[in-house]
Length: 497
Image (cartoon, rainbow, N blue to C red):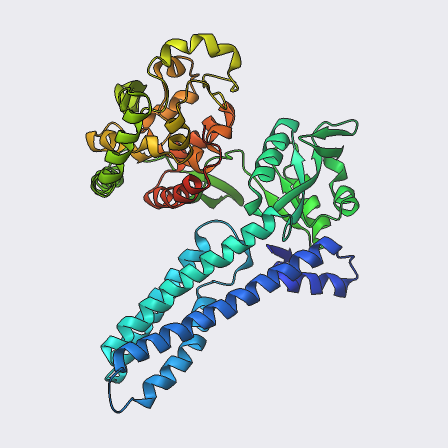
């Protein structure tokens, strides 16, 4: 749970609930349930961390001293003590902070920090005491405990995501703001259940009567938030960008929610700008959100280009036998050409030829006009589920994105990146508004946020929003996360047609 402010001090989780009970406040059932599953998850994390420490210690002991006639007892004791040292180090690094449960890289970053801290501590302590440590033992134990714990935490998170997809371990949220933004966030949270937020009601600015927004009851205005929270037994209130809900009104709402231990989240107006680009700086007593400009040049971009080309070359070498087999299958299927080339719009509006394995009949482009009435997408995109132009081989090539493999040649040529916005057709780019053209300030990618968040199932507006979010927040670590998630998206095959 998030922290709550009481008497000028920050109190988190169970402390806030206990304080509320002592004051005689009525803590909601949802708050208690949220605290219960959060505490259960953190207990599981501690057990997992301890087991990883024990496994790493015993592995290092076995590998380093296996075959020796006289096994040193001191290192066996060290192996048994390692789980406790690891638990303490992870705790010091903030690895049991409930705010980072289930989403974001912070949980894994804190485990990495714990591993670096423990390694440094052992090195400094051994140097200061002139202890003669078996380096082979240390070299195996400390990296292994970090690696084991990262894998275990990932598995634990995936289990949580599966539970959330079935409706468990969710926080009940009342969303506050203007109707369009409330509808957007509700739709997004309903689709992305791994966030653990279930919108149960909405309080809409300027509302005079009850209604429904994106399937959620809108039952009050900005002045009715506390009573709506009680009515729907919510444990979280999310205030979206809303000028009417600011200053004294927001402060009073925080005081009301404090009485029941209900979390309060406030979203800035810059909904798609986050992470390292934003910092809060106090100026004249006001917390101002400072936004740095995104980086579209310099060393980071050079590193991204070098990494993309090296990985693309390695991927082409590894998949060359598969590409040869797929080429043979396509050729035998209907006797048509193996490769499909098409003009796309790249960085700064420059055009290039994109390469793909052919998945449609040879005259597919000429038949596009007669199928225009069947287009299932709004906006510039043209997509049809069960498109009659797709060949037999093309259907499963598309399902597992195997037709995209030749685009690795585009990455080698420098026209595309591994990760980036969806490459657009010239006729699509011609329909772009000013804000959508922002997609063209970076190279298009073989994969991107659109690929790991629904692929062809996304609407045009949602696809644009994800591409712009990537452009505004791109980083090397974000690219690695998207590449990792792409593997799972491709295996599932959902949204590909």
